[in-house]
Image (cartoon, rainbow, N blue to C red; front, top):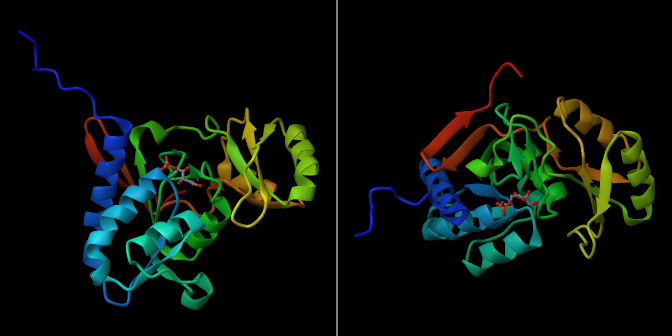
Length: 236
Ligand code: 5RP
């Protein structure tokens, strides 16, 4: 007879679904007929979009951080707006590739980092959704994506090498903005805000995937022992 007393740990996909569902519970009380949400990009956000579609009559629409997310929203019948027509959004909901206890993040695994950072910056509240595999103490295990103007690729790569990073050109990827991505390996990032600011000074760099100046306000994490919600510490 088999032993059913030990349950298998939920898969990463199941955890992503759980965190998406919890985010819906979190956001639902704030939805009004005039609400326009900022919506990110990635597999976790896709699950959030699909869950959000059940409430599409409860809010106005969304601004998307990628063409892929815009299409998914529209396929659900959710109106998609240009950020320029909207200004500030009350909430931005998105996943991350790594997130620290300070709610600083690495993003851009899906190459949407520039529009993600713009939307996060224009959001009153940024809700980050992850499964527990994304939690780290120090950023850098996941390579830092950098969106670069194509003709500056080699220059920016050389500047990164001078700073101890190992840049790898993401072959075959063109961003929604017509640029390319360098993924930087080998950095152990003790001060993400300082590195983000330094990278912002590199000519030809469009955006880096460090979200430290604009970190998440709320982090929802689904793990094998349940779902936890964290707020950004005030002292950082
Ligand atoms: C896309 C992103 C995503 O939020 C990040 O890559 C996480 O994706 P997923 O939810 O598929 O794990 O930054 O540019």
